[in-house]
Length: 150
Image (tube, rainbow, N blue to C red; front, side, top):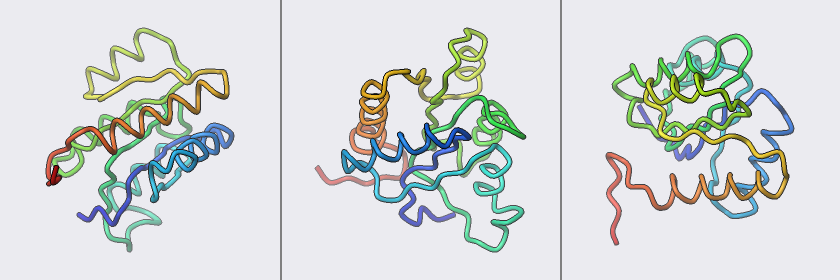
């Protein structure tokens, strides 16, 4: 499994939220390689090299930004599959969602979620939240298998 320079896999069905997230990442020069997928089936196919991604080399992103409320397969099922896979379970997964429901929060952490962030409604707050997530998980956090000189 290759990292192929994929820094972030963004799984988001709302085109506006996906664009805002990409804008925030670009504005702060946080991630060069971001792949956007719109539903849980696409995410699972991409991560496990199935369906339209069967011919491509499997890719291991450095960070997964995952919406909870996705069409076809929801974010919790995607998270469950990621954390059950030996090659993917150490990839940080951040739930970026509009759900404030306690049961969603508890289930996400029970399944191995690394962070749960409720999307702010305010544009500037949203941009700042994405900036902080990117800075922490891509620049500050030391992930398994990374050898950083410092």
